[in-house]
Image: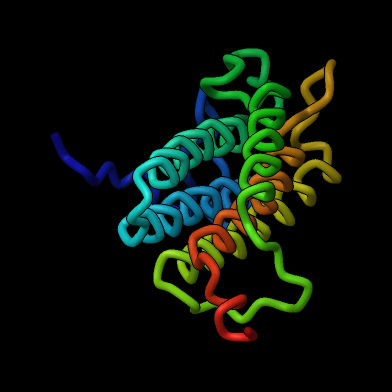
Length: 185
């Protein structure tokens, strides 16, 4: 198997289910940024000692592949997307909200601005959150340009990225533990 195909040498890339776009296309920027977020979450996961939290982060990495697949699909091929596998669902968003509520209940949430870096895991989670916010902004731009229209039903990918960034913020606070409380006490 060869890793290189030479098809991208002209500055274009292939989309899921067919079609090609410029590598500088808004769609490519959005799904490329979700891929970057997957890697950033992987860096965080390396430093997370809590196995339950690490498993959650792994699940979120896999879910970001779903978002990336949806973003990498041209509007005319959206009918080929499979809910939960290549298309974000409302249930996926609901799952993030459940996780947010659960971790908020177990975490002292700050009332001040956060300066990332209290622990390696929390710092990488905070970095991943900023990457996810960039993916969200790029996805909103795609949506505003009509690039996510699917001819029916509400598109969930923007909502998913929004909630995911919120969850990652909460997980970073959980990961750093009582650091702020101990420092200010």
